[in-house]
Image (cartoon, rainbow, N blue to C red):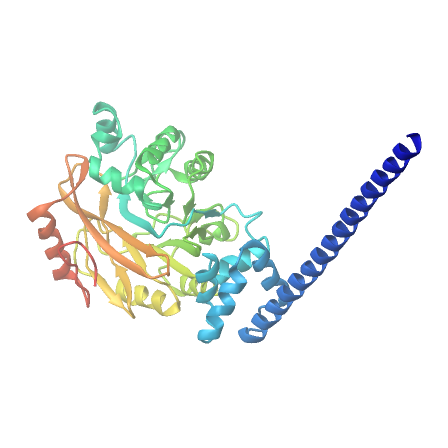
Length: 437
């Protein structure tokens, strides 16, 4: 009986050992197969990188960059390889397979944005909007702020529809035409001087403003100390600004937005004053970026053209209170387009001026006053719609500043302003929806 049990136990033990051996062999085979698969997968990936590299014929792109793209953008190399089978290589393909342009990818690969304080990366959308308006005054010694205070805030000086457009824009840019300080004295012999308390800058957040231009003829109204206070205040309130600085390097410095995976550089300069009282920045002194001679701006645009997808100069220029264009205004705007700018946006004239399409790119000669004083005057918001493929559409949204409040125009009044701008425009037409063609 005992012998029978012993035999049965030995038999069971042998069965268990056999099962364990089978399991062990299976695990070893599985591991071996996985390793082989990984080797094949790795080899295929390396082969795919080499195949793509051979098709690019671009000496600036190496194997490590392509490998990095494949690692960070799942499936991108397969999609890129399929595109290359159907057509010749074009740098636009990178955006098609990663939603980032080659320039942005290269910047990310080289960790260029890690230590930059003048770049903001926005979430990609199918369509993004960049909006511009002209002169804004939040000066305490001028018209808008008393109404802002007495009417209960921003809704007292901007209409609801205009606020909706501004706040919903992915990038909203205004010309900030006043200094910001509790110090300084008004410049002697200057007719109009504007100064705001630093805390007024919080209003820009209420308006949905993402960046301001400071290259204009009122940021130095209360002298050097107030001007330097203004620069500090914008930094304190974390409002990006262009066109002025502690020296010319700062004043010329662009601000970059990564919009829909494309790199935009915005720069700003002024040639507004006939009697020049606002100092131009130098290597060692603060002031604004001037462009009375357009050469420096032309060179800056050419430089930025090589490192950006889009370059947009915003210029403070034009004859005040006139719809007529100055000769230098037209020639310099076209020179900026020739240098590589993708559009030119202007303000200063206190009134609207015409639009021109030059080399298929828009020049908005003047957006005039936007929220500036108590005059009844036509104004407009210029909106750029950026599509995912990098194409753009351009719109003028007519508005009216009246009784120190700016509101979007509708119906016949909207059409009246469109008709006026069309009558002043060169080689461009705005349709009833405000679209520029």
